[in-house]
Amino acid sequence: MGSSDPTTLTTEPADSRAVPDAERLGDAVAEYDEALLRRCTLDQRAAQVWARQVLADHFEAMWDDLEVRGASSGGEDEAAAVAVLRDLAARLLASADDVAAAAGDDPDAEYVPSEAELREERRRYKMERWMARATLEELKAAQPTANPNDVLDLADAIADLEDDLDDSPDGY
Image 1 (cartoon, rainbow, N blue to C red):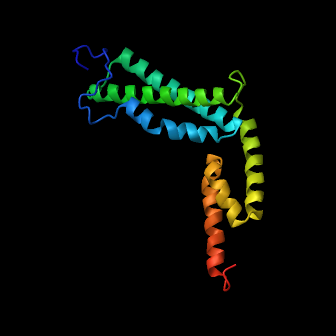
Image 2: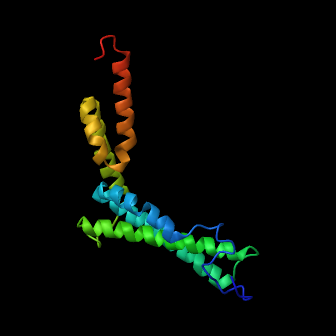
Image 3: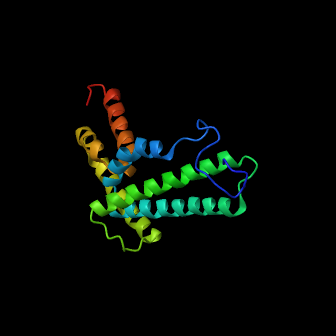
């Protein structure tokens, strides 16, 4: 914290190895995060924006609390850690906002978790029905562009079909 005043905060950690840099973390995941967000449904993107906003608000409140009350005895690293989390949450929120805007999502639409969950349950049901009828080739073709919430289910379905083929005496 560089200053003897415990209420003066800095984003610089006492030991720079102790706290990773938010910008580096954000850069490391930004492209992948945005690619996943582009494959999400409107409801899933809205949920991401909503969740990231809640997280960003929480870290901002932590920062404000540290400013008002001062950091604890390990304050420099504590303040630096909160600063990194705050910056990273803001960066992740900005990514979600950017992808939602590029997709044409209505920024003023109200996100209602219970309604979104119901639509997601219906979407998942349809996906499960499709996977039950799909061939191995169809499942493999769907994997690169699959909704992020379906990737593990697709991988499991592919593995199950491949196991069935391996267990079959004539290979099919």
